[in-house]
View 1 (cartoon, one colour):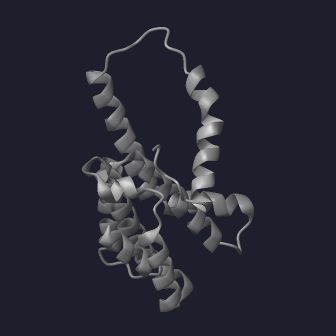
View 2: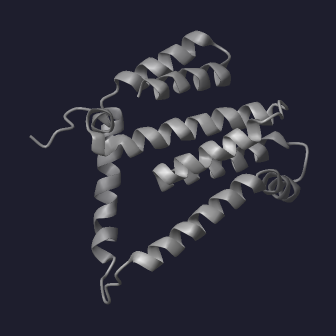
Length: 178
C-alpha cells in the first residue's frame, strides 16, 4: 500500500507540477477507507498489486511519451502485463493511453488523430489483446460449462451496486455490514 501511495504522489506531482498537490493526493488516497479490505486482508492483495503495477506502467509510459525513449516503453509493458496478471481491470490503462495520445495530436483532423493514437498505442493494445486471448484459452481449457444459466439477475442488481459504490466514494462510512 505504501508503494501505491508513493506512486500516487509521483503521479500527482508529475501531472500538476506541484509537490504539495501530489502529497495531498497521496495523503487522501492513503487514508481513505473505501477499500480498506485490500490493505487489511491478504485476500485483497490482488487489488494492491494491480494498482501498484498499473501506476508503475502509467508512470513509465509518461516518461516514454515525453521522449525519454530508453527502456521506458519496455518497463511500461512489463508492468502492464504484471497488472493484468494481478487483475484484468488493468486493461483500463490501454484506454487511458489511447486517450492521452489522442489528446496530444490536436493539430490533426479527428479521424487522423484517432488513427495516429491507435497506431502509437499499438504495443499496449497488442499486449492486452494477447493477454486476454491467452486468458480466454486457459479458462476454456479448465472451465465447466453451465447450460441455461441467465445473466438477468446480474444485470438487475448492477444499478444498485453502481449507486452504492458511487455513494461510498463521497461518504466512505460505514463500510462494514455490522
